[in-house]
Length: 306
Ligand code: NAD
Image 1 (tube, rainbow, N blue to C red):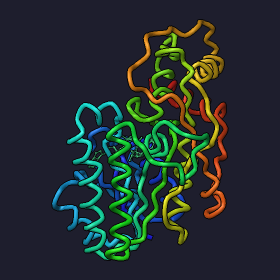
Image 2: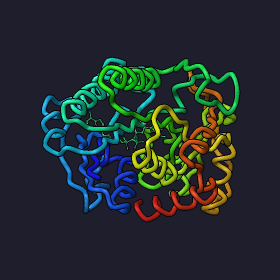
Image 3: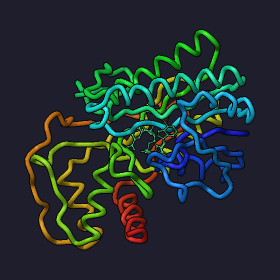
Image 4: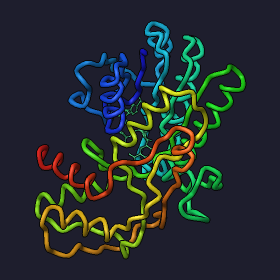
């Protein structure tokens, strides 16, 4: 199938593109390279440097006639969304609306949207959160992703567009960006590989649900190749706190000094973990890479790219 991947020069989008190509799909990447890198783009993919908010997007989609669109391009920085909610909404809401409209004009069947399980639920009432947990984002990034889902649902009712939103927990792995939702793994990697102590803000008991990037890419592949529709959590359901993460990563690189503790950052979410039982039941997806293995692969990647 022909698949258009927005944000394919980024961390997760490049792994999604690699996996689509490995499974025989033809990939066109649209990316404005604001945080993505040319070096991430698979050689077998076509590439167009373009903003998803651009009016010409519709011509690109019409010309390519993809069977499906994987939408990963986004403003991904939670803190930046709080500082500049207008920019966040411009990229994450208007970019998605433009893409969905272009999809309708070009007769695209399905959009697979990268949403967030880490930021959409807010402070959770129960752990892990399933898809029925109330959505109470505590950042405009979480709000703009939720808004994207509402738009896709409305496009589906008005025009019959098929859509899937994959709500990832905190994605980590090779090529990851330190500004993303699991940025701490990239930041600790950088410090440990330079023999510097990891820096922990607050007591380090904040938890996150870390899911490895190839597991996330596989969920995208399954979503585009199957008939499923709707919202699916993609995570492990396992909570790991920052102190545990620092200890695991220190152990892998053989670093023996204790982390440095700094004052807590205001407004940081305390705990997060999501239940991917629905993805398991309806698309036969479950995570395959455990945290220790995934962290080992990530550290190896950063060691080779210092
Ligand atoms: P990333 O920054 O590595 O990738 C985003 C890509 O989108 C980059 O290549 C960037 O250049 C491109 N981009 C940004 N704005 C654009 C625009 N206006 N037009 C065209 N291209 C644009 O981030 P990532 O971590 O790979 O995130 C991919 C997707 O997954 C995002 O939608 C993000 O919100 C979502 N997500 C990520 C995580 C995580 O833990 N990393 C968790 C939940 C959801």
